Image (cartoon, rainbow, N blue to C red):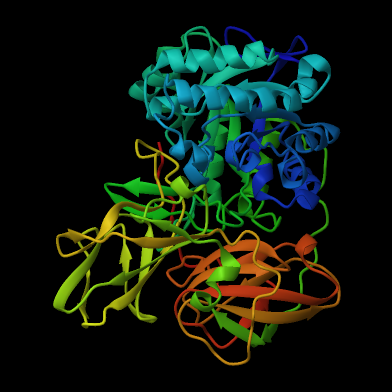
Length: 588
């Protein structure tokens, strides 16, 4: 069932073929639910699924590769094949995907001399080692070997970043040398400068866009006069950022564009077919005109199959369009998964974060504060402690190069919050003659995943100043919180400020649920030790998805890290609340 190209389309095993695909990311779905989500996409009528491969999820520490459990990409591909679906794999190394650093491992940022996404020896050495580990997982599953993988991508939207064709050629040749003998392609935005920077002569070029299909396909034809027309990402909606509305797009309008693409003879990959969840600390971020916007925990994407597997209006609208072009869908939707009954519980105990630092991480004495990456840390929080000299009647504390959000404490009392979006912000203070203990708790809110600022180091990249004077002499403690310590010293009573709060929930049987924290401010939630992701009263989302495989029949433990002011209780709900909506941007 291998795939080849003609002057205007594809052949699959020698017969004319149209790719109608749905994007789905294995790393955003609990592996026990992979089969369910793939079956739901198959019921929509697609004949293919497409997935990125998130390098940083597989090589969290340099040289230590993980292809088990959540990272078992080969199992995901096999499941798709067992359901009769072809698979397109996009192995990066850069993937964007609104994923931390676009899938590039954080440890790259500590490599001396590294420059990302270009012909740079330290970078390409790391990429080559990654391909050495990844390709043996995939090559036995190529269509040429009887498997479901029909095509693989070379990089991703490279024209949005640069035009180093030698870099693309290195990646292409590296894939071929390691056995990727399937159809290879590039994917870039549907504008001339994107295509000029990202295409690789002799290789199939595809386009990524969300509207105006006639203009997009015409652009593709200008740069590729013959060959298949492929919308490798048809953005039928958009992702959500913290502090912004939940982005949606009218199902009928999105279906109209899909119909226009298929009527023009194009092959299409729906981005997304099922979005999933940015569990843990894995969300990415964007930088718009200097404004940093982290991606929300939910990656629902207003997709045809919602975050918890539910079919939305686009499922039915897209299936109707697909059936007009490919014939009746041969499969029905699986039954709706059960939901947990609502309940509300109060915390059973709490403990202040600053009181259990030694349980959470090991401190290092340093002259300057420094970054997470310098200390071998990729995610979570990082704590900086020092002692200020006095007396100072009045001074202003500033952080140069903050990544991303810092809470400031003076002798244990919170004095303010600083953020990278306000680099001129300061915390005014006075220092008595005996001095003050200064604590800074910095949150990594997600590395930038798109654009020229990918080298997004976290913690403090510059220094800490009182007025114009840099302060030296720090105790620095990484707090990855992965996993949480098994025994935090919870005690009865409320705690304000950064603190862990413990809850117990009884459920009769595992099922899907949604957790809400009304009245709480900002933090993260763990269910039976699994990190569900971040919450924030800034919205849009007001619930966190807690999939059935994470629950236990009987007693379940939840731990909430609240960074500011806790509410009175935690709520288990039967329905998601992704917040107020607004129309998705056109995204051409």
